[in-house]
Amino acid sequence: MRVLFTTPILEHPAAGGPQLRIENSIKALSSVCELDILYRVSMLTEIVEKTSEYFRKYASEYHVLSRPIPEGILLRCQSFAEKVLNRFFDIRTAKQAEYILDHVDRRQIDILWFGFGNISYPIIKYIKARRPNLKVVCDTDSVWSRFVLRELPYASGIRKLRIWRAGKKKESEERAWIKLCDVTTAVSEVDAQYYKGIADDIDRVHLFSNVIDVENYKLLAPPPVGFKSPSIYLAGTFGHYNSPMDTAARWILEEVYPHVLQSYPNTHFYIVGNNSDLGFSHLNGPNITVTGRLETVLPYLCNTDVALVPLKFESGTRFKILEAGVCKVPLVSTTLGAEGIPVVDGKHILIADEPEDFAKAIVRLFENKELASRLALNCHDLVNEHFSVESLAVEAKHILEYLNCD
Image (cartoon, rainbow, N blue to C red; front, side, top):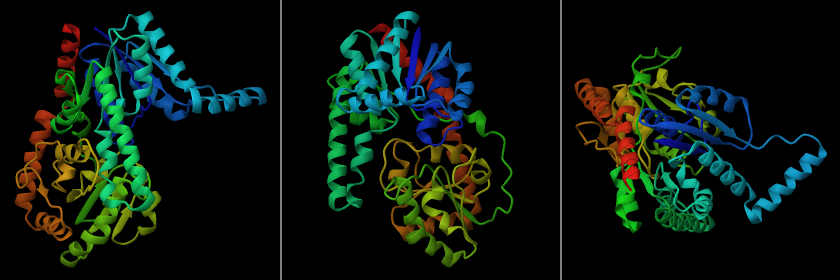
C-alpha cells in the first residue's frame, strides 16, 4: 500500500509536542507501508534543509513544496499581488492541492494522509471536491475547538468573544471534515469520543496515539553545568501571554512555587522550551533558570527531582508525561494535564488542581524518595508498554487495513 503523508509543519529536532507527533507518525507509517512525504512550507530555510535531510530516510519519495523567494522588482510585485488575491480566492490552497493530486496520479497513491489535519481543512475540502473517491486521512493532534474554547473561563472582554467565535468556527470545520474524510484520527479515547459524537459513521474515527521513540531516551544525559537540586521542571512550547504554557508557568510561579519555597527554600525552578525566554527570561536568578529553546531537554529532564504538568486548558495528550515517564522522573499534574493518558493518581503520578495541593504533592515527592521512585517506575512501564513507536505502528496498520477493506 502506498501512502502520501503531507504536512505544513515538519521540524527536526522537534520544537514541541505537535512536531514530535509528526515525526513519530512518519516513523510508524514508514514501517508498515510504502511512504511518500510531501512537506508544504512557505519558504526554504536552513532549518527546512536540515529537517529534510533527517526525514528522507523514511520516505520512498520526499518532496518540499515551497514558494520561491522573489528576487527582482517584478517578481516581488507578483508575489505581493498573489498575497492580496489569496485573501479572496485562496490561490495557494488550489496550487498546493493540484501539486498533491499530480503526485497522487504519478505515484498511484492509495491513501492521502494529512498531518496537522486540524489546520488542513481548506485543502482537504478542495481535494475531496476534485477527487471524492480518493481515500483521505485527517490526522489530528487534539480536538482543536476544545483547545480554543477551554480558555474561555480565563478570558474576559473582547478576547472572550474572539475565543468563542474562533472555537465555534473550528467546531464547524470539525463537523465538515468528519463527513469528508475516510478516517479522522484521535490521539486518545477522550478525543475519539468527541469525534464519534459528531460523526455520522463512528467507524471512521480511529485511535492514532501520541507516542515517543523510546530509543531516543535510553542514554541518560548528564546535567548541565551548575545544575541545582532540589529542582522542579516545566517544559513545553511557550509563545504569548495567554498561551496554555505561559498561563501554566505563571500559575506555578505565583501560586504554587511560593508554597514549595516555604518547605524547601533552595528549590530551583527550571522553565524549559521553545519561546520560554520571551515571557520569563527576566526571572533568571538564584532560584529560577529559563532556557529558551534547546536542541534537547534531556539534560534538564533526566536530572530534575519533579516534572510538572500544570495545564489549565489545552487538548490532546501531553508528551510531557510520556517523556518524564520514560526517563523515570516523578510527575505532578493537574487533572486536565493528564487527560487521555491512563495514569492513576498515586500509582503513576500525583494529581492536584489547587495551588496548595499541587505544592504539597511536589514536597511529598521531595521527602518520600520511595514513593517518587515507585511512581516513576510505574509510569515508565506504562509508557514503554503502550506509548512507543512500535505500538503506534500497530494502530497505523489497523487504519490502513480498514481503508483497504472499505
